[in-house]
Length: 214
Image (cartoon, rainbow, N blue to C red; front, side):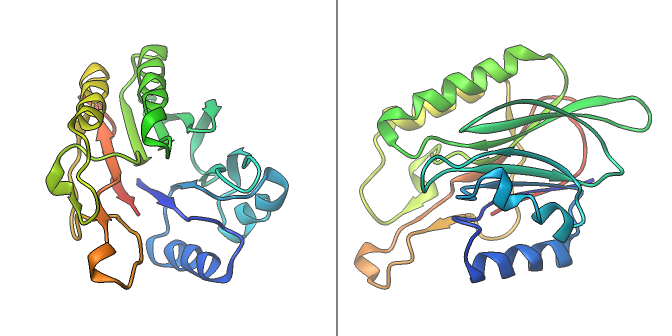
């Protein structure tokens, strides 16, 4: 099973639309989680037909920001769970009856309010004891080497993220390729920033599959 999470930074513009269609064509994911769609369910409805993934769960944008969407192929048995401005939770039943959870996360963008996301992770964890895969844009790093450029991240914020992951017993699935998943697109070398904000986490004995974030 192939699972993809992508922060599209707005799905109402030409480049984002072309990029999403390109991802769908090249990767053919079984499930797709999008964050920062900046769209409501009415405007995102047609995407499930365009992507050929007719299962859909949406959290509307708030004003001009936010917005989440989870798509999945009709061949999957998916039960929608809780959702909020920060996450969409689902439960998947395999053909052999094995049940596991797939959660897409979009972390609170404001550094001072990020504890809201960590409390949410703990709540999701305690809601079910099933195997769990959690992916998305957490908007936080775990160590200084995951950031290049800009102001040094205060240690306390990284420690709070790490503690939340330990409390939830989540294990990093690692990555292949470029370790930096976010850039500020500055053309000035002095102000260019790169960070690893997108991750894949898994509880012990979680479901197997191919994961990708961006």
